[in-house]
Image 1 (cartoon, helix red, strand yellow):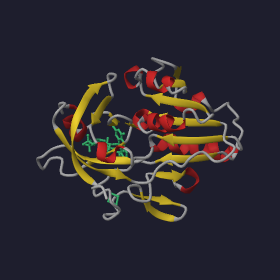
Image 2: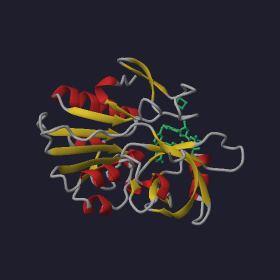
Image 3: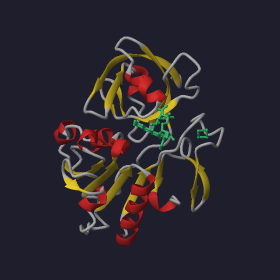
Length: 257
Ligand SMILES: Cc1cc2nc3c(=O)[nH]c(=O)nc-3n(C[C@H](O)[C@H](O)[C@H](O)COP(=O)(O)OP(=O)(O)OC[C@H]3O[C@@H](n4cnc5c(N)ncnc54)[C@H](O)[C@@H]3O)c2cc1C
Ligand code: FES
């Protein structure tokens, strides 16, 4: 049985665009066991501040285990200072994962907002060559939140981009990209990840059209093992933990307040 907590050497830590970084660790012992949608709980310092680990979706698990992250606070800023060769204390892989598209699916939509893009490269790695048309609808705040989509395009993913300020792609929220589309509910599967407001709008879109949709949810976490209940969210089936019951939920189940 492999350990759930390990220290892995950093293979790369680089800025991909003004706002986003990619960090890769050489983690062969967990590489093959990770599924798209799962996350890693990372200790970003040997000191006491910040005290808790920080959760990150797995961006890719190919040669290395990679995360895509945005420095927004102390923990992620400390992460951005890490150098190749340093070791990172990682708990994971944790949580559930996206399920495969149901039989009959022809088109797969990935709807991402901001750093909610993170789980979808790995998902497209898994789904390419399986005969689906893969489409990514991505919304970022500005040009600085959009990095070259080369790796997605290499996976055959058609990418549609919107930015809040219109500095690249269509001006407006990501929902501008698909609100007038009318996908076939029997042949389309939707996966989504991003801020609550975006998930809520995706939820009403898919509900109105009877589309199947899984959402990867984010909450501030402490233990990430289902023990402290700190990451609980309301669902139609009562409160559930994002770290243990999720982070992936049938979007119809989640109550976005
Ligand atoms: C399952 C899961 C997967 C995630 N995947 C990624 C990922 O792939 N890449 C990535 O960059 N981030 C991801 N996050 C968010 C990431 O964990 C936070 O950005 C990080 O914990 C911030 O730590 P910090 O110390 O830098 O900022 P802090 O100082 O802790 O927070 C800075 C600000 O961000 C807010 N904040 C912190 N965490 C969250 C959150 N989860 N949702 C909304 N606001 C938050 C705080 O309230 C505060 O205002 C994920 C979170 C979860 C739960
Ligand atoms: S973070 Fe402790 S239960 Fe989810």
